[in-house]
Length: 143
Image (tube, rainbow, N blue to C red; front, top):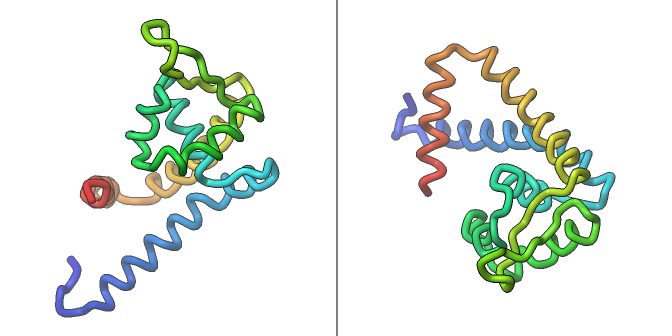
């Protein structure tokens, strides 16, 4: 348990979180860099891959970003033929997003590197530590 009277304890946790995230993103960042892409592109690929046919509006809501923030990286992924936009059957003004086969391969490579990294860490942790970590992550995600 962290001692609330010792702010350095929280600083240690912040540093651990920072270094863990750096380790988690290192390999995918290098893969992306070779293609002139960054983490925002990976997030887009990841969530389209997990939610095929998500609308642009749905992706905006999911990522909690502005239309302006999503526009350039999504356009780049479309131009690189990693993502395709398909008009929705019920309203052709709505564009549903899907990974192309090349997009699926890239997303699998990126997420595969992270999956292996995370699985190795979970395998080395005690089960109760992994449960605690998941609980903390869920609380952090709530904001």
